[in-house]
Length: 414
Image (cartoon, one colour):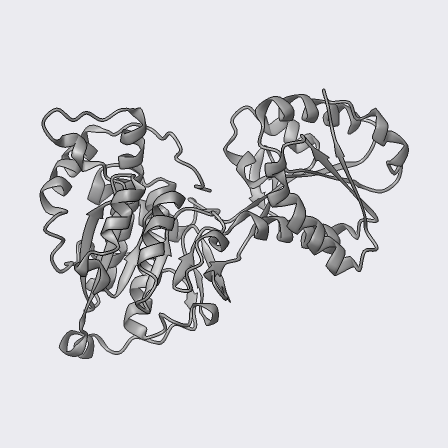
């Protein structure tokens, strides 16, 4: 999940060359996309209109313009400019996403569709994103992808709220309720839908009579706790008792009298605070030696290296996730091979996000289903899209995977 300005690996030498190229071409926009690969992974999707034969496409397919608004930070290439660790990480993210996205668009172009990618640098500044919302080229494009970060997207969408075109939030799971734009498409599933999915899974799999929520005391956890409680109360008609308590210094003794000796004891820990997690999970692990414990954690846990798989597996930990790529599948191997051939590096999470989004939205532009996202399902290499339409919030991807630890690896629960 990308809800904040995360620090990412620094740019490689190859990416410096690409940044230099983008600095020369971004302001002038990209020309029509040409096919660059001969073989591509087969991505499953349903309810997308079947493409006409290739000769018909080439003869009649109009050019679709796509505006990409990414934090390339190109001003740092000017005389006197200099990238720091933060701006480098943002440019790195942008380039990975761009490469995956362009690879997908090239795939579609090889089938005869016509595209024009127009690239704009948001400079990771809300004021710049706001100015771009007045840009005539962006306003006349068929599709807008970005800005990436919530503050920039908010500033942009506040201005570009009139034209009936899609504005895609490509990476951030931030709630669209704060942006209030009916044309917004949130691809990364917001946290509230993770919480709801966890509640549904707990009811369906365990029929739990009682669920313990261990809180650190920080109010930010309510973004998870509130929808979790509401969903569990709704589907169980308040028959499942929810015990929510603030835990200090890992002290769980006060809960022992409420634990079951025979059934699974379900614990939900929505915190992302390292100090709290390290102490609390150690105590919970000790408790699991005497009682049956099943743990549900925050989706960000999968990225925390300090949380050891051995510990989490012992507590039968489950983590919800929007995305899960099987890099050993035939489709993934083919994509990785082609990506390496093109860019001389392995694709990461952001490159795969870009590829999935390019293939999905590029296809929609040519099928005429761009306004029917809630009726269109898609399964890509990394993500599955299941959109719902909400008034004032646009389209929101609600798909969530439930993962658990098996052989010290996170795998989908079957």
